[in-house]
Amino acid sequence: MEFQERRKTPRGGSVEQLATSIREGILRGRYAQGQRLIERDLIEQSGFGRSTVREAFGRLASEGLVELVPNRGATVRRLSRKELVEHFQIRELLEGLAARLAAGSATDAELRRQALELRTELLADRDSGGEFHERELALHRMLMTMGANAQLSRLLSRMHVPLSTAQVSQSLSREQFQRARQAQLEVLRAVADGQPDEAEAAMRQHLRQMGQWMQAQPDAAFGAERGG
View 1: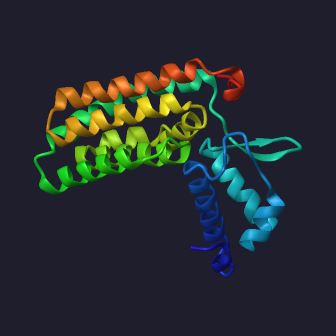
View 2 (view 1 turned 180 degrees about the vertical axis):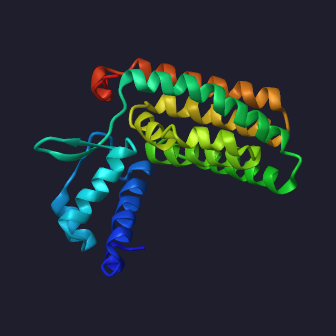
């Protein structure tokens, strides 16, 4: 839905629709980590008023997606080094379990077909941050669907998986993209073949590797550490 179609929406709905649009832009990489969100531009693009834009910023700040910086307004949040390290430690365990559960469900012909289709798309990808980000999210969503564990899905949904994936994709070299894609393919092969042990091991190795790459990045790649 385009911004201009939202002008007649009731106020509460306007805030949520604008927040949703910005949220999707952040999670899909249209807004980069550390990028300032210009209030004036969003007012002009959306047709909403200043108060609606500021309420949307506040909602996104409460979700941890943006930071409200004095005298600068809203900025897309960049995770700190410590947050990313801890994030990947947890993701390694949880998404390893998701891969195991997905592989155990791979006897379903339709789910197996989806895994093979995603594998084919990965084989055709070029080495770009945008494509890596989209395929990593597609892999994440597919494993959640195939594993059919609602509690696990809820746990992972609280971890800002797309946000951390976007931050990683902005930092990888071409060689690292290639290695990450190969790891994704190995996860999909094990899932499609119905091999739970191999699927879990491949996913855990993939996420451990990405976490190690991020730890090696310079301080400029990370946000400031938060207190508490």
